[in-house]
Image (cartoon, rainbow, N blue to C red):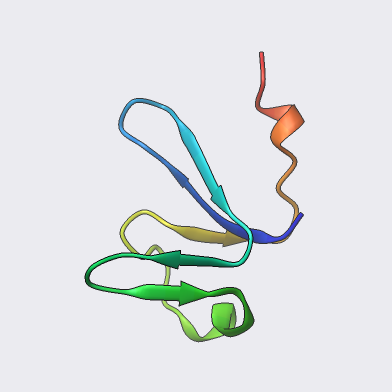
Length: 55
């Protein structure tokens, strides 16, 4: 699964397949190649599989 991913300070994994919207920035999936990562901890991934992260 493609999308934006971020791991919080508490270890929680956030995933946003389409966009990330914050006060100071917006990340759009269709423009993912234009950004310089990380953006506030967010990265673009091509192969996110959440079931691999569950214990």
